[in-house]
Image (cartoon, rainbow over all chains, first blue to last red; front, side, top):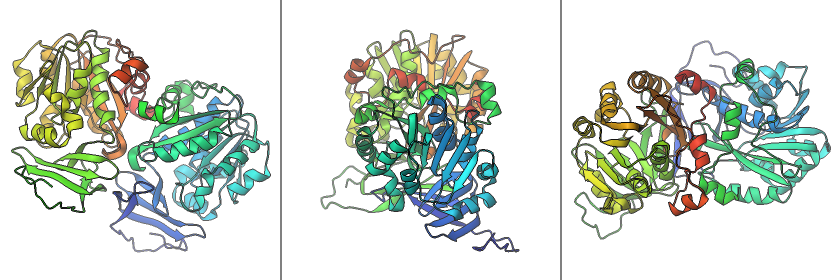
Length: 300
Length: 300
């Protein structure tokens, strides 16, 4: 175990306790308890509680405040999808902006894309990046990619205001819409994203579970629909998130944008070369197929 | 609240407690706790504990022994898929056999299909059917469909041995592979299913989560692959099940069988007429698109 200052505690402590997560935004009627087989790191940063632990099912887990953000078992299903969905529908994704994503998983995926020349990341909490570098190397390895990645420890909300017309793809890898992350779900933020994009640009944002937060997604759609001429929703399967399903809101500043057909089509060799465990061309298309009740609710 | 003998307890008791479910077959390192906002019914049958309760997120829930079987919120994603996937890839699904499925949800879906003339169901536990009839009417309504449905309170394992060459589609809606339900995952059962099918027949069985039970699914595939010339796996999203993902093993006695393209294609009007909330033609196809790591593990 490592203590708060990163000092090694020689005697290996196995602390058996549980990480308990309330599953939905508005009710506490479902709780998911993940056993902490080994506590790896815990820290209170200026913004949040950072907890890294080992679980027998999920492997290494990162939790921020009340919620698991990613685990070794299933992070591929989130990171690959939030990154490759927007990059592969953009004609030429040269410059990518990541808001949030302090664990490094999204940056790792973005740096893989052969057409991407630069990835700029804005993470408000330097401590998350530091902890990930030390304890989550499978996600944070691209932080050392000096050819492609520029890291800013800055509020993403501010950054997008200051950089109009600079990016082809903007990925918002945020926490749930409560506390400070709530700002990343408001209309003003989406207006800034719109300004920040170059022509033919695409955004992709973490957009909650349609099973548990359909009303929230509807109201988000209502806001974003007024700003972007094209908007869609894709889904992925992430068992460490409540409901096991999470979605992405995709939007483009181009009208009649085709989100479903990738412009860059990866064959099996490409997928293998990029080390993709979840994403494929067929998965890209399938992720836009939604249950009938969701399509109806979102007018898709 | 209703007591074990179905007698109404006049004073309405609101019992606040939790239903705790261990999420995987072999580890107890993940526990999902669903609040019992209102206990509706509990009973010990000859086979299992039956519990019906109300939860704020899932609505009415049915649990058998240690596991939630279905909830009002998400049962559509399971019942529609396990029923319409095999029925819509069969050329002419006249006779359908359901093993298990005591809640009635699968029978409800099978009875909807215009080509289905008869649905035979084998449920070992009469008490589950009775409880469902009384407390889960949204699922059990087809139990009164005397035109199409024949109900047998019998061991499905025995039934399939006694009825060779009788069915076009056989659906196994079983509990998890532990206790008595384990028999429904062995090679002998699949040999009986093979005998029980008419030419061009299709089976569809509950086949666990690829996130949590991939090795189990691999070994099931190994067994079934030796018996059926065509085999495949489809997935659906069910938030009340651990991992939020569950799959179906589909197999046919016909070689080179196409599972992905439905032979009966429902347009939007059809889906509306059949009251489908989850299934559609595009969902049918998308459900066979699996993450790369699953495709590799199952050689699909």
